[in-house]
Length: 357
Ligand code: ADP
Ligand code: GN1
Ligand code: MG
Image 1: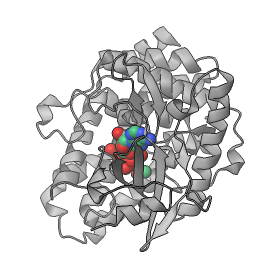
Image 2: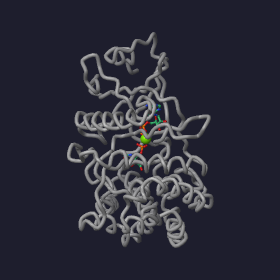
Image 3: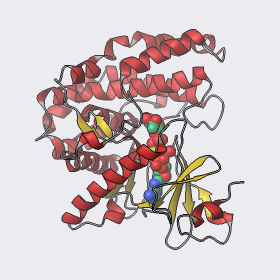
């Protein structure tokens, strides 16, 4: 039993009993809790297997949220709604260490996140992630620590998969040979963005890097985007990562862990809704090469996520939270089914991009 009362006291928050703190949200990485005080708070146990340096991680988030907060204020907005606000400890720190765990608190933002967004929400999400990128365009990237090195280095992800197949630590590889074979057959895609960044034909920008649509909070009534959250991976990256990852999740006809693969495909109307919102914000700053690669980025980021789930399954489910033993392999099959479907739709996606670029 976690002593939430003792933890929250260090943030100057008093609760009468542990029941006021309940698990919250659908994140795969941190342990998130809603603190039902007045006002409400979000308490998170930072996953330090994933984020190995919580001090520098929280420093990143403090820098980014302060920077965004100033921009939001300049535009007449409310920073406590439109971005995350760190609640400091009574000693002025960004997190509190308790029994070997690292806890942080954010102000609660009264919005909802969606796992299967409709077109209206996707248009709003496209605008929100595009705006997020614009807001950070003049943020000094050198101030940021790389919270997960090589996060979207698809070639390295591919090599890690191959190593996991060879090691076959859990003895699972044989039973999922079909998934592995398909994953390895997609090697031709893995260097395209990585090489473009290396030879500077694709610009490095400050990007979010985890643009799953449930990392946006929407207004319950109006469906407008309130805030882009989950800022753990804000780092130098490519616009293609943010676009591709958002549509990996957002353009799918089904949730990420749907097991009926006939129900899993890429919906072009969803792709169009997000693209319209996103390009409306970023088309002036996007390069021709970035625009050209937008459709492929959806394939690439879906593929990358698929092989990360597959690798985690082969390595014994140590990275992503799972809710049943086959969860990661179900997710991997789902994402790789999407890859196969996206491959057949790249031309249509390019035509949609042209319409809004
Ligand atoms: P993870 O890294 O595990 O995905 P997130 O930071 O995305 O963790 O948080 C998980 C979920 O908790 C989010 O999808 C969102 O629903 C909710 N959440 C996180 N922070 C806030 C906040 N400040 N206000 C309201 N809800 C939040
Ligand atoms: C994780 O943290 P969360 O649940 O928003 C992961 C993403 C994956 C996503 C797949 C830091 O996102 O990279 O795309 O799961 N975040 C991290 O659902 O690894
Ligand atoms: Mg999240």
